[in-house]
Length: 363
Image (cartoon, rainbow, N blue to C red):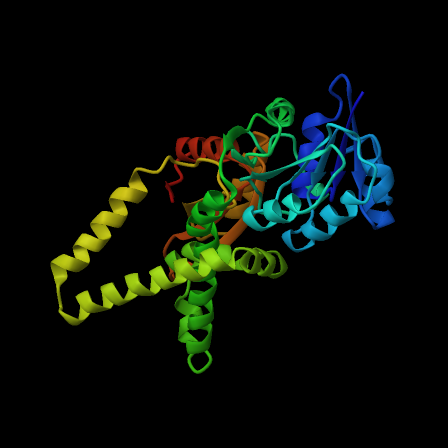
């Protein structure tokens, strides 16, 4: 039997476990220092067995997945370096930054086991083992960061195992990964948080900011609601890259300020044209590091029973509505509802059904 140890059976760790569990020749063991977490992942059928003992989970494991927060990865690596690991075993992680952990692993000895950094670029609005699903990684990019010292046999073995996730596996240098992900994920999260904090401060003396901060503002700042502890660890781990990116962001801001001072209308338009062209070239609804948000707006009549009728219609077709928001209608006019779904399939089916029933739908 191939033993797969999952340290930290939450959304990512639990989803990995479900990709492997039940397949012939695999035995999945979950680890958490908290007994209640162990019971939960076992009772939900996410793993074959669970333990609070790190040594027990690691013993004779062929693959060890560290699915704990970035700030805890070094501690787990050091603990594993003191365990009698199986020769030829592969240790990997799922952290959002790779340079720091790869360098830390290179300074440790794992007694014949190899460490390969990993980053599955997928997520969901919900967290925890309750949200785990074997479909989480389908068509998502999954970055692996071996070093020149990594045995090719170990890398090939990990690739073969991860093919069960149906992810798109990408081999990349750890520092290159951190630079790219810093620009496309970490910096946007920082900018979103800074923008929300700015508007919040401006709104301390005028509640008009909060009243009007909807629509586009809500959409572009959605990621500012991310878990503060997770993003604290990510920012600290990738601080050198982020400091360079923030300086570049300041330069871009100053460039735009110069265009405004010059009242250069064409220069402003050129900035938006360039941005629009690049963004339009990006694949639609590709799974990526930022949590995908499947939602649209539907125009409805402002009358009793409308919401019940609509939700019943979706439920009768077994379309799972994740969340519903009510946008206050104008007096005597139609209203709008914001409908959120857990996946693209439900969104497309809901949009098709509602349009067939005469409901105007827009994004």
